[in-house]
Length: 439
Figure 1: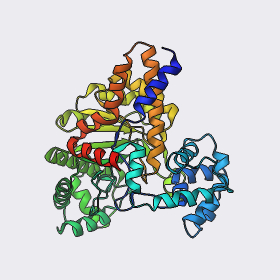
Figure 2: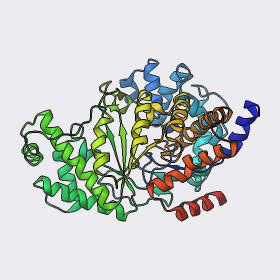
Figure 3: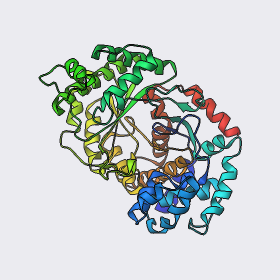
Figure 4: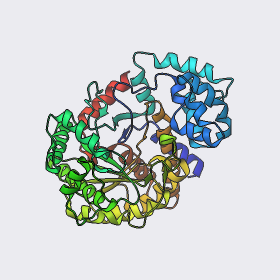
């Protein structure tokens, strides 16, 4: 079969497939961007515009999303070729029927067309149907009340505040956790008990996983001073060394693992981000690096907790090979999605082929969008599907599998594997699909 015809056949079969989005930042109650101006000001767009010369301070001084978009859009043509630029145009075409290029002369017309659609009562269902996404994981703060979650929304407990002590002040976390659990927290044991309460509460609300974002130099190890003493010193306001802080961090990491075992949670680990490489611009300035021991760090937890599923994703394309080898050697590990800086079509295609060749389709999940609003998911899922089509086509041509087997692989990655790996309620998701299909 000629390559062009093969890809066309694969796309026609894969494009309408439903998917499970197992990591997003979509907030309960604000699932839609609400306005096109806010969608245009996605932080990826802000970073690209800053690289094209947009003065950050002047941009941030704008009073609302419309003013920010008016300031930002003139820089759009300077970022042509980026995944974000292409993606916003795909959203404009696919969700709002806007065929023009987004420029300082056209963006307001786009906003008029898009804002009317987003005000429709059934917009979220319309967008999900267009996205072909049946179930969406959130990223929920330990203090979040989770009220108002839609039937297609999956809570996920984000535990950075419990583990990343360099980024989150422990005293603030203790105060907040004490308030939400109603428990006095004076010792490390008290803190662990309060974590237990919150894990249990999230399970009652339907959570099936916890998630954490880790730096590339994250390590586990015991120091000279006990973790309890380090905890006491921090709460007392006394200085502690980096090594002592890592001792406490190690204890809290293993506490989270103990609670995953207790409540049957999957541990979603996102590794490789370096915060604030460009200082003063928030998450527009985060970077990445590699560390020789990043994967070795997890050997001991994977061996010690064979009954806990570890779900890994990495930020650097260069780490994808080591991740495959890690997952290949541990039955309790899976790899997932294309996170952040790896979520570009060329990297997706390369990584997908390597993943399939090294670990097959059974122990990996397809794509998570990492979206902050439901409309962004449209282009992120479609870009992944196109890369998936190209990958599967070349592997069919190279006689790895047949076309029918390729379609089975696509369905597994997008839908079946996330349901199995996270223990999701298939009947509930299939019912959501029936509702969305009829919308």
